[in-house]
Image 1: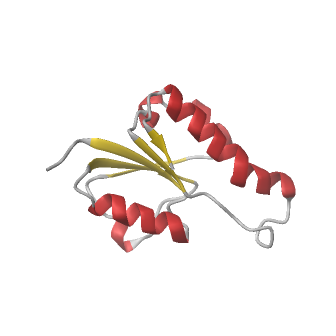
Image 2 (image 1 turned 45 degrees about the vertical axis):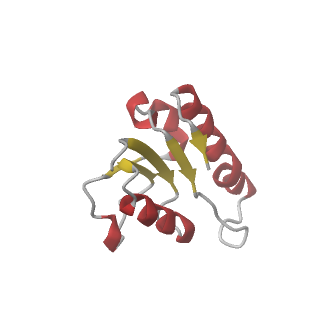
Length: 115
């Protein structure tokens, strides 16, 4: 039974995000799964009619259409390591600023949960 719920995933190309995306695409609880990404997904299990991908520069997240953020559940899987991202400002953007911005925007649009 489909409930028509909508999910939004950020960080779907990473290890955890890929796993979460796969679970959401297989779940009968979700009719739409939106992904925000810096580049197109190249995952074999990302070919689903449920999937809607938006490619963007995360700094410009607030300029996107409100409809992208009108979801029921948000899954933030964005992350990096200090070894991979030496610039502390960029590290902070990825680890804190972008997820907080996403939480604020989706809450304003009525999201029921943020994970």
